[in-house]
Amino acid sequence: MNFPSELKYTKDHEWVSVSGNEATIGITDFAQRELGDIVYIDINTIGSEVAKEEVFGTVEAVKTVSDLFMPVTGTVSEFNEALNDNPELVNSDPYGEGWMVKVTLADVSEVDGLLSADDYKALIGA
Image 1 (cartoon, rainbow, N blue to C red):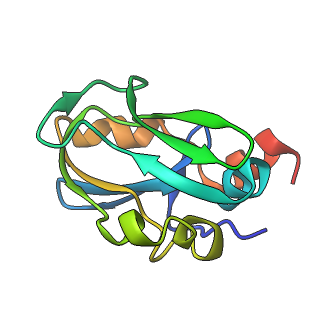
Image 2: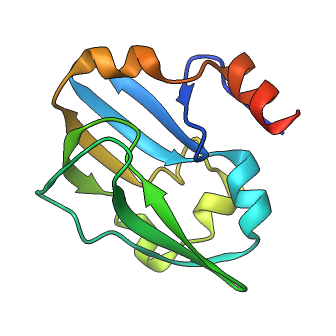
Image 3: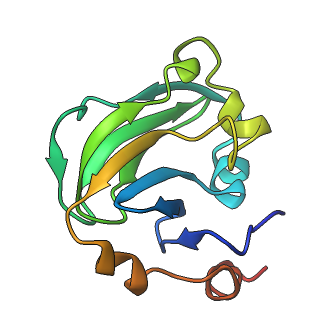
């Protein structure tokens, strides 16, 4: 499994990449493997501020539906429209083309409370 060291991670298996006051968020390689083939992603929070650890959408796999939890408080500014036609991008490229949302951070310092790649690997036993 892949765990890019420049990203931050959550116990709920989301990853975060920060540039200035904008964060790009997706699910980890571990999460997509656990879910299996992803068939649909529902993000209905575009334009809304979502608090840290609140649900910002769902991901549907062949056998299950799982909530997506916001790693940091922020306003959802963009959804990865490519996922509408190709939700399997999350399976094939979870840290690249399979990103889910971009958010404008309410408090950049919240990122400091997220897990490092090593901490996340320890959490999942990798």
